[in-house]
Length: 251
Ligand code: IPE
Ligand code: IPE
Ligand code: MG
Image (spheres, rainbow, N blue to C red):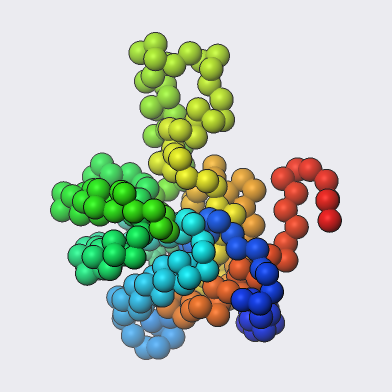
């Protein structure tokens, strides 16, 4: 907790703080937040949706270009069916309830993750949210739903293999750049900053390729308690880091 409090005291707005272009967030700790308040887990997830709204708004205010949110992982299928149903219902609710506002605010929605095996109505909702906001040029809200980094890599490798077998791609032309074009995140820059709430310090199969040079900030707050001050604290921490990308210090 101490670290967040310290960073919070930095006057972010006046400090000429470098703003990360792309922030990715592992929104963790809804269940623990609920348990801590003597409430069922679904209440934590509901409060988590309010945090999402706050975070999207603040990302826009801070001039962040891309915000990627981890909402449901490939491995979350191992949770009880009732919780999975709750999480899917919250996604339905969020898209139906918030899409008009997001659209009006210029947000472009992009969903990454495996689409096969999703309930038909979710598939359709996701597709229409993307189509309806495709021409917006504000914040890119990249929603990782039914997403796993390994699953994304395997699907990408399969597509590359199919193209090679079909004679559409020469193995000699294969490169990091070509590979990236086959990922779900094609066309979107890698995250500059990864934030994980709840105090856990692991990436849980998130964006395995894209996080190669991302700065990690692990915060001890549960996701429903993540607010503007905590977000600014993470940005200030990012600003204080020295990124080298394998090169030498140029300070
Ligand atoms: C994050 O909160 C939401 C999802 C993973 C969908 P959790 O549900 O993982 O909450 P904890 O980790 O059990 O506290
Ligand atoms: C990561 O959180 C996935 C999401 C936030 C959607 P988990 O709660 O599933 O991660 P683990 O199980 O603690 O690693
Ligand atoms: Mg968790």
